Image 1: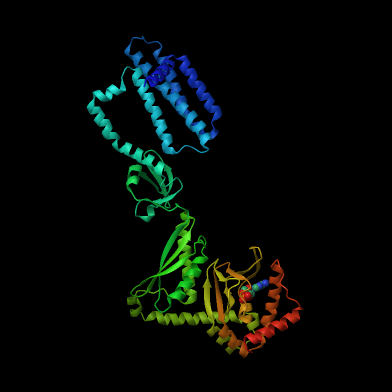
Image 2: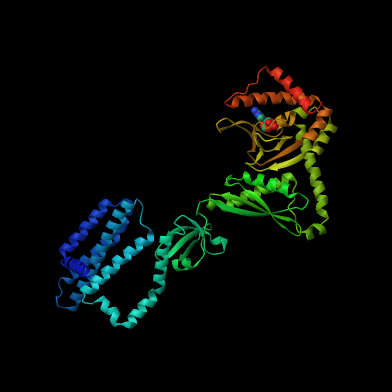
Length: 507
Ligand code: CMP
């Protein structure tokens, strides 16, 4: 207590001495200007202005009678201005410069604000004492004043202590994604925690300021802790006509290829409900980039639509609508006929099918199916088993081969009229490459049964396809780092493959 009084006396004496006080403040400000990074020098404006005002007050006081009350008042004001300038400059030096460098990062906003507040409170107390007012006696002699200050500070102090508790317990930090309100639109990223409130920025770019006292009483969901990985869940309805196993496979295939979805922990599907007209599925997957969650959810939903469309899984409408509407089945039949017609046109331009007699081509169009894929979707995965041949009807796909060591290389791009998937279909071997859609595309899918029927009717096709197959095989061999041992001439390879195909299809 005695020490504090001595320090305040010394400060008052320095400040009142005029030149010495101004000299110290000016030296401190000059040192700060030299030491502070350029971007932070704006902080010096306030203490410089206060020092300027102090000098102005001294100049105005000069001609006045020292005994006059105006002289006394100006002295107190000048003292206050100088002490505030000194306090602010000392704060910048100790807290921003020295402590900032020592800690290797800026002090948390709330501690920063509290120290600054204490400095200003100290300046106010010293000025009051110098003016002959004992601040302690002010509070004790006026019970009313004490009550007024106590009541008005109640909430502020509550927020201050709640803010300190947040700092100590750290349920969240700046940068974390949190939810305080049940409304999911108010989920936001913490951008500041200060002595009064915490500010979060939502995905709608709305700043939400929550008083620390309110936060202390709320349940906080932190999506960034304990790790940045968060689970998302999308509800999808599937028809009763398709088994949950098949729907699950389609959903998992769709989710896995969506950008932003993590492969570990793996996505999973729950058959959650048997509803009136549909089975309710919950598609669960994990993401790391929480800020992009809406975009990722949307990508997953789009891929689910494509996967369902390909597999012929209809998203069920409420039963009432389905029973009342006869027209859709007619229009459905019409659109199926249109699709068959478009398939027929696409098949006609495929080189190895060009020689097929029209009835056989017609039959192939009937037996095959049109599948749509969106950009980025994987049609075939290298190493998987496969029993279908695909013909590109529209769009473009990329043929990617995985090398030893994990790298990949694109070996070809296939557009309308080109085909792929013939190797596994014809030899029974695992898929030799990955095929990925590079634009939205429509593919004609021919399964083994349909292909067998056409092959039996026109055995010459096998030879034509085998030629392409051998050429592609050579391109593949060139692209993998360890060349597979495939001895013999092109001719010998073609003959051996043809034999294999004939055996595979029991021709
Ligand atoms: P399949 O092995 O069944 O599955 C992957 C497909 O990629 C393969 O059949 C071929 O149709 C296709 N493919 C492989 N290599 C090439 C290549 N070099 N050029 C074009 N397509 C290829």
